[in-house]
Amino acid sequence: MTSHHILVVEDEQEIRELLQYSIGRSGYTVSVVPDAESALVQLQNEAPDLILIDWMLPRMNGIELARRIRHDQYTKDIPLIMLTARGEEVDKLKSFDAGVDDYVTKPFSPRELNARIKALLRRVGDLEGSQLSVEGLSLDTVAHSVCVKGDYIHLRPTEYRLLELFLRHPKRAFHRSQLLDLVWGRSVFVDERTVDVHVLRLRKALHEYEMDTLVQTVHGVGYRLNPAFASA
Image 1: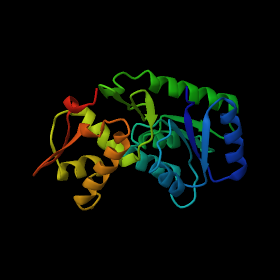
Image 2 (image 1 turned 90 degrees about the horizontal axis):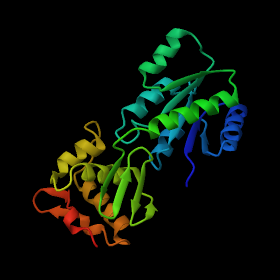
Image 3 (image 1 turned 30 degrees about the horizontal axis):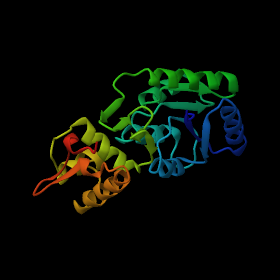
Image 4 (image 1 turned 180 degrees about the horizontal axis):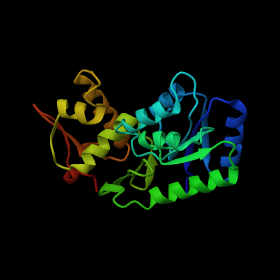
């Protein structure tokens, strides 16, 4: 069984190395980045199971990063823990308003931090309705994983969001403009042909398992997922 992946966003090297060591010793896979910008770049490639954010980051602080994560359709459900020396009640309330799930003050006990990580992951793992599937293909919205005929496959964030949307609404035809709004967001201005590129990538990922025909082109409209076309 694959271990949970924790992303640590911390600008102080000493603390970053301490967190990587102590969290890694608990059996988690740990990635570390020094600032919010690096975290956002990493989130474009892979969604971790939990993110640990330092408040006092350079340029974009932890509060703003948490808000950005919560406003992104792909990352909005990832558990967040704020790590900071600011222990006043008003600071904690500000963190929770930004969408943070838990708050740990410095100096911190590595054992307590790991206990909080474990508890938060368990709480999220207990959520119901995390599995979306058709025959031979399943997507876990909590683990952010995709399994095809028994094999876990890697999808880029946009292809993952497309597949999740299709699985939530099987047989529904989506116009390209609808897919742009629902997957990319209304604030992102990209050409409708971008949808075709990402659907092609999704089909390529499924082709090895003869599942690419699941995603059908609806001429004059856009695309839909049709479970009847799943390969036996």
